[in-house]
Amino acid sequence: MKFADKMKLYRRQKGWTQQDVAERLLISRKTISSWENGRSYPDIFMLVQISDLYHVSLDDLLREDHEMINNYKEEHTINKRVDKIFVICYFLNIIGAIVTMLKPILPFRSHYSLKPVFTIISFIIVSSLIILVSYADWSKIKNKLGFWVTWLIITLLEIRLTFPVNVPINDNGIGYICGTLTGNVLVALCLTCTVWLFPQFKERRAK
Image (cartoon, rainbow, N blue to C red; front, side):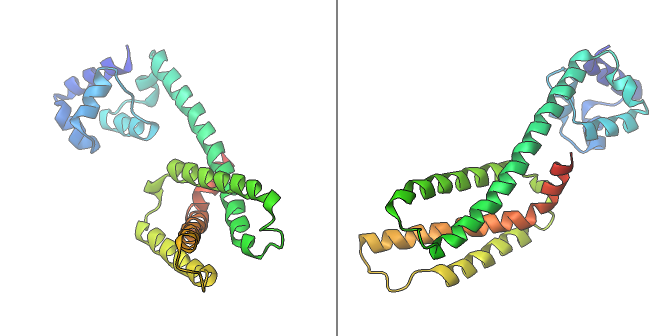
C-alpha cells in the first residue's frame, strides 16, 4: 500500500476529516490533500509527527512505497549538494570581504592591467553572497532583528572609515560615491553573514 493510501486509511480509522488532521499537525488542509493524492510527501520531521499522531511506526509508513523512498533518497542527495555549495560560498564570502576591505590599501590596486581581475573578483563575491543568502535557513536565525541591526551598524562603520572625501560634485564624482556606497553595503552584508551564518556553516560542514 502506498503512503497516500495509508494516510487516507489511518485518517478514516480515526474518524477525522482532512481539516482535523491539518489542525493536529499545524499545517494546511491543502497539504494533507496533497499527501493523500500522492502529489507530494512530508519531510522527515513531519513524517515523525504523523507517526506519533496515528501511533504507527516509521517503517509502516514507508514500507512498500518505493516511489516515496526514492523521493527521500533524491532529496537527501540534493540537500548534500546544497550543503557543499553553502560551505564553498561561505569561504568565498570571507575571502571576498577581506579582499574588498584591503583593496583601498593595496599598492597595485589602480594598475590598469589588474582592473579585469578585480572585476572578476567582484562578480564572484556578489554571486557567492547571493547563493549564500538564498541557501541559508532563515528559520534557524531566531533574532532576525539582530541580523539587520548588525548589518546596519557594520555598514555605517564601513561608510565612516572608507567613504571618500573631497569628491567633486559631477557625474564622475557621483558615480564614484554611489559605487563606494554599494561596496560598503555589500562588504557589510558579507561580514554580517559570516557572523550570523557561522552556526549553519559548522553544521553543514560536519555532514
